[in-house]
Image (tube, rainbow, N blue to C red; front, side, top):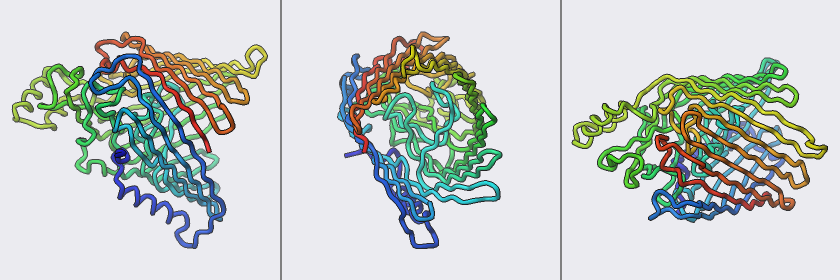
Length: 457
């Protein structure tokens, strides 16, 4: 049976759908002016050249498909409703077979003074940031790591999203009533720890658990060639600290396939800055943030051993164990740029060169933001080849290297439209080397090749 949508209660889904539809026109009979049905169906496969860390359950290949339709309905006054359900089937991992509501929201708008207001009510996806290697400031939505380890795919987030725009910029407020937990691969899945993460047992710092009300805000404006965004978030972290408790945890640590990990979500506060400066063919990019309240990945070793022994003896519990993980204020940043060569050698093709540096002042205590590595002192180098032909052919290559550890990854992607509605996507994600002290060392065997044959309607 397909897994329920990533900790997304069916009752909550029904509430948001009903509220979104009613909000399109709360005081009059709805008169639909236009509607559109679009979407995609994708046949997909992955191949892992190396044997997994748990060969008894992990296979070298997986196949599946994705269905993601989109319904857009607009009423006569311009208000609209958007619905984007998502379903994936995976042949190897029952957890990766899942569904979600990526979007299900009503859009209302009007004038306010010399500006305009807009309200989105329902489940939606929000994207913040300008960098290529990671989006530090992007925090509203939970990442769907079941889809891809690059952290670019997101779950739909229930929200009330209010925007006020004018000549002075855009001001956005977000009310986020429900936390979407991150779902980790199952026993047959790749790109995971040696042991399993228990998706059914989740711990929260807040006594309200997933129902803690979170809030976010963002101001954005363009000053000539400079685009800038300032953001703030207060609530439940989207990133989980993973805790292994006796008796489901063995002293051998992360490399033991019999270990079971429990996700823990702390209460955090984050302030972010993203900026992009455009000067002819140059793009200069910056993302930076300050966060407080997050539990770091590694606690104080001697105290952890003592707490672990106490839990094993039945003298204490989870709260005592999680307290060993440090709760620090920290800063992180991504800075870099992109230069584009247009009409290379007189052709229609463009070539873009990218370079970025990632910094996190926690160092090895940092949580993994992009699998299979933490980005605490890492360089990202990439190139994008856009052929600008009828088939929209594009090739992207990216190399990520840790400046302080022997961890290197290489990714190459190829995209091309085959026919009017058919397209091909192929990619290779290779782990060239990984430091034994890296928190994701157990995933060293999970480089893969992936192919998509996609139909768009």
